[in-house]
Length: 426
Image (cartoon, rainbow, N blue to C red; front, side, top):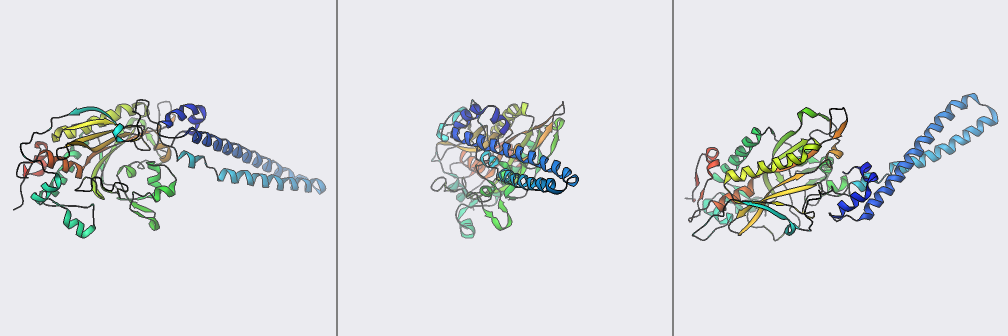
């Protein structure tokens, strides 16, 4: 959520910045109009309350016509106060604020879709194959490690069963990345995989009210329980320090959350429906940081570098892109993606994201820290994918495949897998 005080002081700055995310200037004008009405009504209600208190003190000292007159005035004041308080209660300021996204940094490239993202740099060399390249689905069938048909029978489309060394590879990736994060001071967590609507709302990932957060079309929801399956551990981690004032000396506070993630993938029909790139359930290790605002840009670059080191160690070619204004999340001021090279598609595909949300989320969760001069300030929050298992497996299978369909293991993973190759099924 944006800072209403800052908007009052410099509305043109916000109009200009939010226009880059498709927000009309009239929405800022509407917000300021509602804010003015709210503050005037609040001031009026407080003033009338003071009048009531003063009159209450005088009434016992009066009698006769003078007392009757004062009582009549008290009734009128009470009615006026009630009307003012009703306007305050119907305040639309927060609702309008919740309809506004975070302001993008000035350097974020302008654009509408992922095609407008800016490629920053590519790393690693594409593998040279002297045989016909297979995709991960065919490799999974040949090695009997990705079983889509069984998952379809038990659960429907967009699910998969990882079997044998495919399952062992998931656990190896989890521990490999977790070890790397813990060396960097991240606290490992396994958060709940169901989440309250209020917690989703506080993460501020999309426009709208609490009701919208409860009924978001991409979620698997259970409205009668005020719960939904999590789409990412980020939403839970974001509220770890709700309404707390953190110790400045402990910043940055770094968490990583391991979870299954559940998404309907609404609107993605016809795209990546083959295999395990875009599925309803996948496993992910997510990073989340609470940081000093003055250091959030620096920490953002650090976690991007940490993400890169994972793919460097895996030996997968990749590129880093800076997402454009139309392709960053609602809560983001800046976002990077890492895209891994997939030989079967002859293209780079997204495998991680890395976001700086500034104080957009912490204003909703009311998470602050105390500065050296004793001032309480909202922290900045950062989030980043450490590893999205299914997409990592796709990249490994396709980049390390052999002519017969078997798959070599990256050297960095062999101590974790206990094997150096996934063989063909017997």
